[in-house]
Image (cartoon, helix red, strand yellow):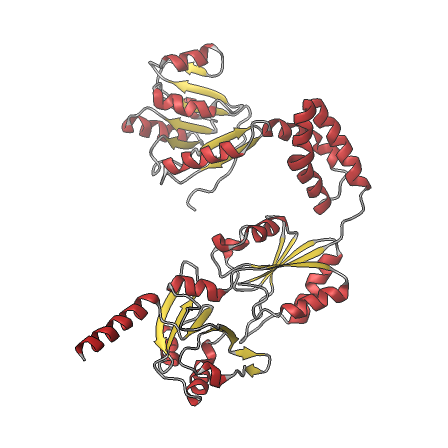
Amino acid sequence: MKHFPIFVNLVNQRVLLAGGGETAVAKLRLILKTEAEIHVFAPAPVAQIEAWAKDARLVLHRRDMVAADAVGARLVYGAQDDAAADARVAALGRAGGALVNIVDNLQDSQFITPAIVDRDPVTVAIGTEGAAPVLARHIKKQVEEALPPSLGLLARLGQAFRGAADVLPMGRKRRDFWSRFYFERGPEALASGGEIAVKAELDALLQQTLAAKRSAGRVDLVGAGPGDAELLTLKARKLLHEADVVLHDQMVTGEILELARREAIVVETGKRGFGESWTQDAINDLMISHAAEGHHVVRLKSGDPAMFARLDEEMDALDAAGIDWAIVPGITAASAAAANARVSLTQRGRNSALRFLTAHDVDGFADQDWRDLAKPDAVAAIYMGKRAASFLRGRLMMHGANGDTPVTIVENASRANQRILQANLRSLPEILNASDVSGPAVMLLGLAPRAAAQAALDLTIEEMEQA
């Protein structure tokens, strides 16, 4: 992010614009939405600028800008469609202490003016740092359609009521009051009785909220999926946005955590197989203590919470504490790994069963039905297997597995830094070591990436034809 988005207070502040053509008019249409004191410098302005000056919406100076004009100005725009003339204005603005924008010249501008959706006092600003104006306009159109024109009136009425609503305690109770007003009671009252009905509804809702008992806390055990925020379920996204507290493991990506409310308490409760980590009891205690205070807690787990995530221990602890909870499943890493390797986890005539394994349990290496796993058509998704690769190879080959059995390793499945590695059972530990696999990885035993599997099939057919 090269440009940090902020909203500048322009009430009674001087904003200068040099230019009198259509480029200036386009920029003025936005600036005129503010309460700034606008000065335009143009020896020969077009009719629209003349009309705005006649209506006292701006001050028109029929000359070029000089140094004294820029002193004390908050913003200065160069919109003359002349590089040399705009460079001169920019120098004057900077010397006078103003922030400078040259229209359609991102490199020499100190700030940019985004596309704006105006539902005063609600304002949505959309910027692409000059990279894709067409995209910004498209997003603006979508936002315009999503936000009803009445939103501005509701926001103004709510703003006027904020002083009265301050009797509500900070936190969930106050947030619930405003959520119900803006998304339920306010729109209904506006539709049925207009502004008068909205004001009455605000008073009624406030009294009801004050009289209501504190709502009980709860915990949602939510699957964050393999890492790509677009793979979150809609329910997971909604709960993450509503949560007072988010407790997440270390594999949940930053782009997913960005979806949490800014006011939410966000704590990483990582459990690492090798290294410093939170104990499960400590995580349980933290969930329970926050929920007991009336908070909505989201326990955010990478992948699916029911897949090797010690879900039963957390459910038991919440039950013992009398805390309400629910499970929101997520896409497990094996599904994402197979999808990105372009393979099917099951296939008619190949495997009618699929095993999900962990290479480690609470006592170390996990034991399995090795004889069954060593069968030629066995397929398994192996979690937490990087450090157990030699152990896995030894056990499987000891029970008859072919060393040429394909293994697909998918590191950081679904993420921008995803890697797909092709190995076989014999070479598995060496491939892992040589490739320096450090991120979360799933091993798909018995499956080769689609391209490699097709190449092997073609080679077999060719050998048969030659024979």
